Length: 201
Length: 212
Image (tube, rainbow over all chains, first blue to last red; front, side):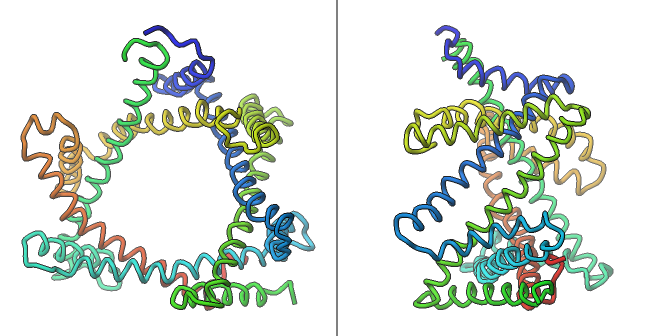
């Protein structure tokens, strides 16, 4: 295999190296890549919103299906910009109220669903050591986060057990995060050595 | 009347109630109203993103105008943004969709955004590891427990773990399925109970800070 001749691979490789240069110290190459990432990410986000929402949910229904109802959310959305005009800034509360209302309305049933499913999952279907540990873990963790009672005496001892479970969970989550990042790192090194330099297959 | 908070509070209450009712009664007319509300939600929510972009670009334009520190990098940010938006429009004109695999827009995604993001996240591996070394040095039992669990989970998920002991991957699975699951469930129950409480307060108009 030989070194890549694709301009796109070269761009990716140089940007990758620019980011990794931060491992030595903060430098203009890293800053360039960092600011570029922010710029193109928000540009990408706006383009995706334009395509998936404005074109698909507003323009097409309005122009092709003559669905004039979509003008309402469009106008509500535009009211957000009333924040820039001092005398009309209060109007921006209307779309915010809609978003908050919809968000909270959606979250209430889904929260109930989650709570019931988790409680159901905690209920043992068979008596095993594992199931017993899960029940103890859930109860002690909940007690640890219950601050209406002082963590002294029996409650203090129970919450200590809760901390033990929490530490194990955080340790596992931490280990997983590191592994995910290392997996990404391996992917980038593979890209540099294989796709760019052609050293490995 | 519009200047007060009553109309926004009434909107929050009504929309919230519609969403809750339509979850339990997904039939007409609630099901249809829910679908329309969700569509409206996605359209309106996008405008909040536009506000954010306006704020960010405004900040960087000001930095360039006043030639503040790193103003050259602000030009890179603005240029990157403009490049992607133009590529999106150009891709739509040329291929009918910006997401066409031949469009420059798709190339930007594949050869700029993907490598930059994955490299940035992979960079965190080094910093998380070094920060963890400083923070978790087994100073007490809890920190030691966290550290040991992390090491076991990491080793149990790679081939070398099985070489050390064939029981290590199994033990890792047990940690994930039993003690980790128990604590995660406890934390999750707390989070969702809290979310439920806040949501009810918002819908009933007790919590109004989002309107200030």
